[in-house]
Image (cartoon, rainbow, N blue to C red; front, top):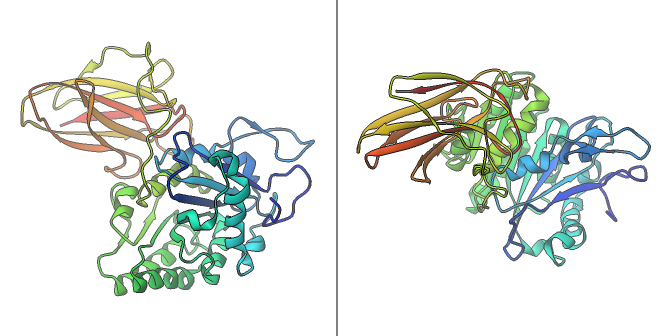
Length: 392
């Protein structure tokens, strides 16, 4: 960038930007800007494969955060600036009034231009979503405090990033939106450490007084469902390590912000040649299984097991799954999604309604016949681990 938020050694990326497959470059721009925490290289965090953060150093395995953004299925662009390179948390030049607006203008006019087919300006922006993980709360608060691009910033997502305070700044930004009749959302997901829980509840209580029934604390089901219907959603997500909180919950939060939808590409559809005959299940059954290599593979890289169940018209059934310890995300239980398919048509799906990373579906059969229950891992890429599927 010509004017990066922090000056870095030659060869260190100033920013990573990503245009998802299937993005409509003619539509109004919805921009997601991610701010990392301390001691991180944004290229390694955002990209996949082997990533060299600084010339002459060994490659690191990319965490693929840009593709976690894509898992939310929104028509939005992703940008992630490099702040202090392998250093403590900092806001960089975002602490300067007016810098964020200039940063967005440069991104759209220059950095994103090849991916969008032409330069754009901040006037093309319909909304901006700010996401901060860990010490990434600092630039978020500075942008809100200064009111930079206030007319564009519609959503804030904080992932294990409420420990540093900022309740007044966040509340005042939300209050200004409520008074203007401008829809704004805040989603905060955090572990039970530091002041995060107290700050989250204090923030929700303050907004609840101004806008009753527009806040939710610790919703029991899917975080995306809660965010869709509330101005403030704060959730204590236990047993998820600090670094994994970002990778496992960011896309779920983005999915609830009301951004325009985008068809997943590649889709969560079976790869030809990997399908097997679904195993039979009946009401009252509990199946212990494992998602592992050799299972049905979806085009987005996820793995799945399938089951078949015969139902009568109008028959009610509840299907839920509980993930065991994940083989691929050692912090947590396996994150799964339930889908029900009839004659090749998707008729129901769920993610996380049973709490945590576990899905639950309540289904009424629309017609007599055979239904396929697909249990697949959440998002793109291969995840593996045990589960228990219950039909009752």
